[in-house]
Image (tube, rainbow, N blue to C red):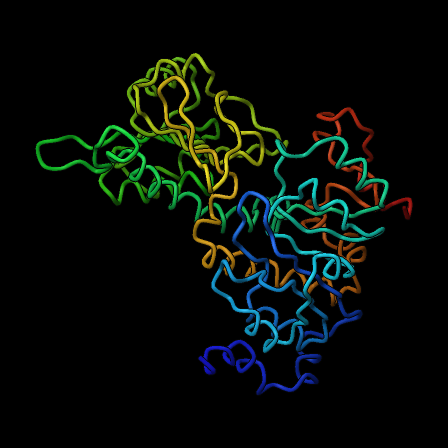
Length: 403
């Protein structure tokens, strides 16, 4: 046990802090807080002990609420050995300047926010409300959504990494809910003399491709729909003749949905808000006990019948169709997902320390800037502002005017 507890710190203990300062010179140390999550049965944690050790050795201060990593099988002592300060209350965590959440912001979090803080979190549009946003604006909060952060023009690292987990796990879920325990009692991949199940996937991005690969690996018949021909070509090149691809033609989609055994929503829209591609009337014409897994709840979902569920009560049945609509699907494999999240956040936090803080990083890095949806109290994403009939300001203009 002792060896396990020492492992995160040991990897960095042989390198003196002065050497870390030379490798990763910082202009300003960061003060980071990580709360214990309860919303939507969230089990992930934003930083693993290894990442904490790396950051504290650079001179950054990290405080963590007791028990925050337990659901991902990280003990409190793992974090204290890695250099973090353990605190017993949520209020103490929110004394930090930068808060790293693994769950979307909930109304219960707002009471802890401090004026001028920076909050990193996933974003869940169906759970946002006007009162929450207005309070964050009043407090001059800077809010950054993991899903919106880019590393290049067209690459979203969080969506890729977490999407890969969600896509793979959605096929495991499909097999589970097709079984006798919940559904029609069939095997996803079929057997000799019995055809495999038909899996229809909406979206050829990170989640869709991961789901398609996993489904094909199990022997299912896969159809992939997307309006981006480039993504469809990529899918075809990657998976060959094992996959059927189509644009989102409503008549063709309706016909194939009526034949599907599993339908997975895996679309992502650059505007931040998803169109309901599958109408309720389409769902009503699907076969009974078909399984719908909507992985794009963060943008509102792509099935008209979807509504947000959680890990305690993940499914509901509507029109005879099993709906799985958990937004933080990767939290079901929380340790893997925590490593994925931590691997994305750690280099971002290093860059922030090197640039001198959140605002200098926002000013100097256009890809990181894309993650900002509230800047010092000013709402900067038009689609969020339009949804709640709030005023918004272009972030580039705010930066140009030294806001």
